[in-house]
Image 1 (cartoon, rainbow, N blue to C red):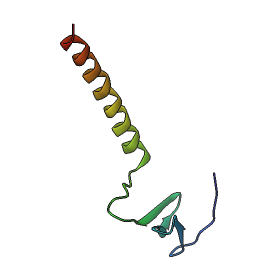
Image 2 (image 1 turned 90 degrees about the vertical axis):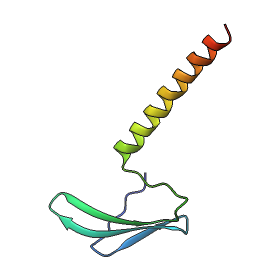
Image 3 (image 1 turned 180 degrees about the vertical axis):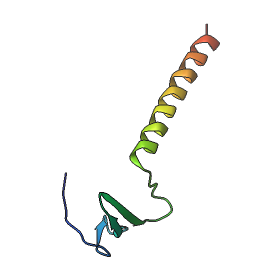
Length: 71
């Protein structure tokens, strides 16, 4: 993991097309602004993990349905 220090209104750039800017700092909370191409999905980690779990469950259900179909 790369750890960087940034102040309000400072930014980092990832892969030439994703920019993350510090918009606001209040106590222990930091507000980020993310600029990325439309084809680059950006999720909060907890949402990303929920999507992954849903996809995993859907795959197992589909696999079960297919196995029943071919019995």
